[in-house]
Image (tube, rainbow, N blue to C red; front, side, top):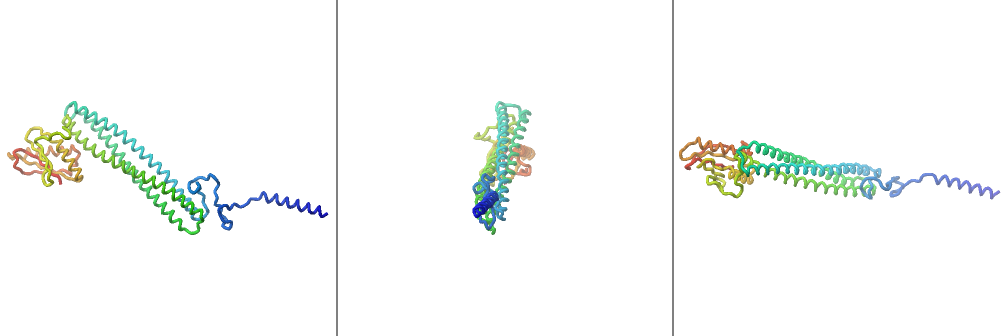
Length: 341
C-alpha cells in the first residue's frame, strides 16, 4: 500500500516538473533582477555603438541616446550628399573651363594670324567665352552656398557633442547608458572630422576658382581690346611706347600718356599699370586728367582723355570708379594723366 502511494507521489512530481519546464523564465542578463531591465540585445541588432548595438535601456538617458543617434544618422546621410555636390560642381567647372580655353585659344590664333578690327566672328566667340566664364562663376557661387550648409553641419556636431556631455550628468542612468554615450561620442567625433575636412576642401576650391576667374576676366579685357584693334598686343615684357611713362611715386600720376603721334598704342601699358594698382589696392578709384599741350587746345586733350575713359570701360572698370577732369601743364603736346586714389 505504501509502495502504491509512493509511486503516485512520484508520478505527480513528474507531472509538475513537466509543467514547470514549459513556463517562460525572465531574462535579466547584464542587470539586476530587482531593477527588472532587459539590457541585452539580440545578436546582430542594427545601429552603431558599443558592440554594434543601439538598444534602449528604458531609462530617460536611454531614450535621449536613441534620439541623438537618430540625429547623427541623418547628419551622416547629409555628409555623403554634400560630398557628392562638391564632386558634381567640380565636374561642371572642369567642362566649362575646357570649353572656355578652347574658345580663347581659337581667338588668339585668329588674332595671331591677323584679322580685321572688330571682327564680328571673334566678337561672337569672345561673348561665348565670357558666358562660359560666367558659368564657372555660377558654380563657385554654388560652392559658397555648399560651404555654408557644411558649416551648419559642423555646428550640428558641436550640438550633439554638447548634448552627449550633458547626458552624462542626468541622474537615473544605468552603466549601459554610459557605455552607449561613449560609443555615440566616438561616432560623432568621426563625423566631425569628415565634415571639417570637407569644409576645408570646399573653401580651398572656392578660393582657387575665385582667383582663377579674376585673372581670366583681366585676360578677357585684354582680348577684347585686341579684337577691337584686330591684332594681339605686344605682350608682357615688351618695350613700352615712347609716348608712355609710369610714375613710381604714389602722389604723382600713375600713368602719363603723351599724344605726340597718331594712333598712340597706350592700351597695353595702361592695362598693366592699372592691374598692378588694383592688385595693391582693389578698392582704388582713378582720375583721368586731360592736360592740353603748349598750343592750349583743351578740346583735343579732352578728346584724348575721353578715349582713355572708354579704354577703362573696355577693361570692365565701373564708371563710378573713374572720373574725367581737366588740368593744365607745360608739355609741348597733349597728355592724359591717370591718378590712382
